[in-house]
Length: 459
Ligand code: 4AD
Ligand code: MG
Image 1: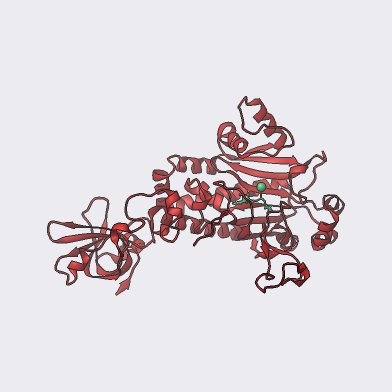
Image 2 (image 1 turned 180 degrees about the vertical axis):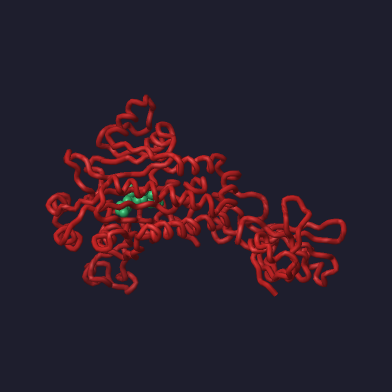
């Protein structure tokens, strides 16, 4: 007996007219007049269901008549060409056993009718059984595969940077503390020296500082792992726990970095359009009718490059009313970012050279001494997808942007500038935002299996 998944039954011609065993969850069942039941089964291997035809002659036919959405079943039968509309194969069941029934089928939380994404977030344990979350999960997996493939093909090495850290890379103070003091029932007056690591420790907000040491040895490296931010912002773009992809390249400046970001995005997007064709079509049909058009355009069009001062100028001259006024020195808000990508460029925009006051200490100071070699990649619908920069490789200037405490804490980071320093650059890409971009979904909470946001850590 050949064990087969739905995708294998539908795509593998060698299985035609073979007897197979297939397991999955019932999506629907209906009876026909001639004494048959048609059962649609999904196992997550692809968007499509397989139709099983069960004859009333089957010994447990009465049980089969009870099947409804959510039951788990194991089916044995022959794969045949199907005459049914929209189906080119089905399985003629010789055995159909019920593995797990659904208590109270009327109240199965994700019964067939469509549900809002808000509701499905409260059912994070069952939403993977829906078409949308099945497709999201497959696409998310395929993106992560494509990311590793891109870097591997281009000579990058994957470096696993630590999750527990003692420094705040971005300096924004959005850290989750890691401590065993309470767990050990010590008094809260104990000092950091009494804690597990003998100092204050946190969950990392970025692997960048660590990965820079590897770039300054292996030349092309990247991290891809979970990052954490105690950002109290309840937006559709922010998670407290998210995954970040951070390439870092040595002997490279900001332009090389921007080129890498563009090449990387184009490669990943075209890969996914090819490898997840059916799922992407599904999102185009059900979620965002312009998705395929938008992805195609990203692959074909050159990204628009403008510096921060030009962006401010364009926004000010646009004559548009913004909630947050635009002025040189202030950070761009998401309404401005969307305006630039959706109204001005109709596509991705790379904004470079931001005022040094609004960017992190490690970004390289430009010759004007007012701006740093930073870049944000903004895309329509999502806003900021990537944040990166050329790093300050000159010790004296780096020191001038760090206070005494930071210099002491990051002594090892400073040493990279003392021993064979090189121009280097890198960026961070929010994985869930990339999943949004590729699926047309609107909320990052739907781009990760179990989202963590303020006051929300169920499941
Ligand atoms: O712009 P950010 O803060 O850059 C860094 O952390 C740098 N150290 C990266 C580097 O140069 N290696 O974050 C990078 C990206 C953002 O552009 C955004 O896509 C995503 O990470 N991001 C978030 N995604 C989901 N939820 C959040 N709270 C996020 N914060 C940032
Ligand atoms: Mg940023």
